[in-house]
Image (tube, rainbow, N blue to C red; front, side, top):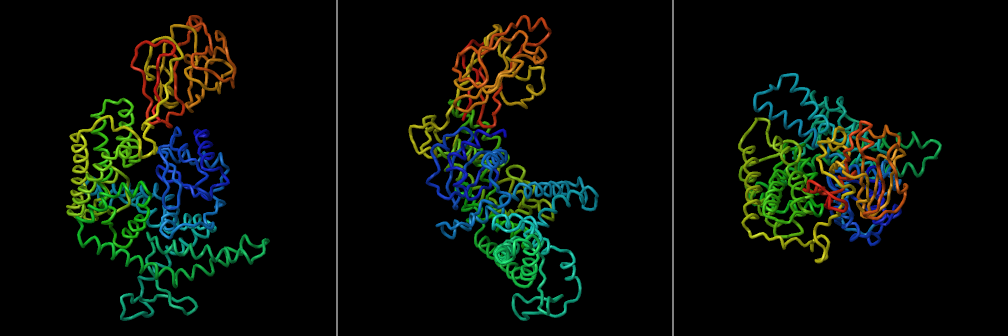
Length: 633
């Protein structure tokens, strides 16, 4: 429950648990489907500590959090008592939304839970290909075979995993969905194609197919369903409706086993006889169409997709291309479409780096640094929402760099051969079965050019710090982009880096970012207005939650818990409301030292991950009420 307060505030401002139909998350966003979006306090959420921005797109109410969104999601589910794993938040309610929004919502709901592992296994496969290309491994070595199994397994058995997510999306039994996926990749069925066919159907047509077995004398057209996406999604969609029919007519006392029994007996043959073959043919047609459109002009396609990719991401429209990517990898064994967008994140961080070097605004600089670092690894939301989009011109410049990068990818024939990582981790994904080729070099050139163009154009375009007003996100020209909270010094003394604290948990930053003070006076004052949320019985540690949401830990000395309160004299009690400058504790620091304890005192922001940055004072000595830490929101 690290983000319990943030989770509670988010739930309150989306209209409460009763206003939520469903909740999922992707890499950086909580994706709500709300019964009534007018009940959500969008402006409040946008300005909330820990929330980057809010986007309404594809029938979803998207609360952008950042890289730690899985932890926030878990706490939102826990705080709200949302039974999302059981599909209790029915996403099939009657809503007035267009077909396109329904499509985007369905695609994101089915595919987003798989993307993390899909990317991870793709990265392993990509690095394995890189090791082969560099002749560090051979394709017959045991190391290669094991790594390839790790990299291939998830994608090969993708229908099983999509069976689960699709069942969850369509409010069907999750294990029925997984079973339907397992049937499609069942080895005994696929191995029959190695033998002699019984006969051929649809002879003379483009879909002429050999028949290797029959079901109730009906010919079964066997297909290769490993790594496929369309057949299982359609199968589970149909299966969910059939399951609901059986659930409505079968008595409760036998529903547990008879509903799955009847559903599988109907849907599994239907998927092998009708849905699977038709969906596979449709998938091949989709692959051929996208390849045909790409072939008309790879350069123009690169300019279009590369230049607009970040716009697609902002509105969640990129989900419409995810099935095309996975389908192409399954049918064509490569994807030339999403491959064209590789330069977008690098153009974005090129622009951010230029702003970071040009700006004299310390608040903006402190945002740009973590945004640049996360952008290197392909997560660009902090850069987009925190730096470039609110200033408009930098965002346009990043799109220009991405468009040129896309043109290079198209001209060089670069292709994705696996669903790999983002940012620099995506580079090995451009290595094909034959090793490093022109397309791989095109990927390298494109990201370098996109990065350099974004940086150079931004650096020499006359950027001024006056361009810091957030009239795009906050929709209020008086609201500045970055809000900050100042934490004043609770002690008088000499500042020290946390690395100087002789306690590994503090020194490594495991407990949060902050600073330490070697106190010269035995008095602690409140650094903020807020509530004294924790006062340890031994009085050696104080926990404060500010009115703005900062969670501050003041830990007096190292191992001073062993004193059991000796030499400490608290002036407040747990739960008290406190004001900045109010005396919280008095202690005899000389007596504590004589007892053999180090008196160095870490001041930690326990919820550091809620902030873009925690800026430390550069003063060597501080007095009460001096600015000690600045929290960038």
